[in-house]
Image (cartoon, rainbow, N blue to C red; front, side):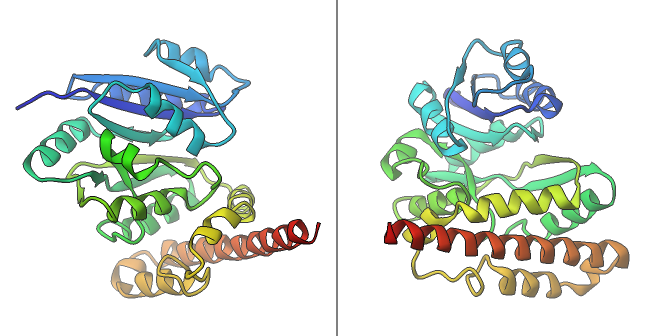
Amino acid sequence: MKQPLVSVIVTTRNNHQTLEACLQSIAKQSYKNIELIVVDNNSSDDTKDIARRFTERVYDKGPERSAQRNFAVSKASGEYVCIIDSDMELSTDVIKSCVQTVAEHVYGALIIPEESFGEGFWAQCKKLERSFYVGVDWIEAARFFDKKVYVQAGGYNEHMTGGEDWDFTGRIRKIAEIGRSKEYIYHNEGRIYFGKTMRKIYYYASNSRAYFAEHKDQSALTDKSGPLARYALFLSQPGKLFRNPLYGIGTLTLKTGEFAAGGFGLIKAKLNSRNANNA
């Protein structure tokens, strides 16, 4: 099999708790023709020191992950690029599987399914939630790209903080076919705290003005990735959802809280937009 160079890109910001495991999973890939690029965003902890133990290609760029990713791709030498977050760990054959899949088919990008793990009750609920998304194209986003297709599609929208993965995957679909890897990414949720999660969702939603400006036909409520479609997806498999009733109820509670936090964030985004237009 041809061994094209793959640039694996990891974006970071104060991620010392999960970064080493992430980078170790990349170093242990069965596919060896890999260059690792880490783009940090002004971390105040030892994130950069950890990254430099694995690669000399450590850069600093902000203000958000879309800009970090695009910058990394501009520095990448690979024929393909794989973009992951610093709280993710790759199964041993992920890159091998991706290269084989694009070699056998004419794909411009690939979705790599995710499975969550973590500590505590809410992490188990998040694991259950994510299990519903595997194979659901309107929720999962591409992470492995032919670099030429990435550039042709224009990269991630750097004005977006939230929704940028779906936006970019949608633009890729207009110019190339998207396939799917058989291997998994394992998403380290750590210990999930309900209040902290709500604040994070609120932050992304309050900065989602750029996403909805680009997708004016989409409603936050009735869109296929919105709450109504998500609840329908969960309830389409009640046996799976309530196999452990406590986790099932917890999953619905966590997701409802996230949608509520997102709703308040969207209200803030709209008020900010109105104020900006009236200024």
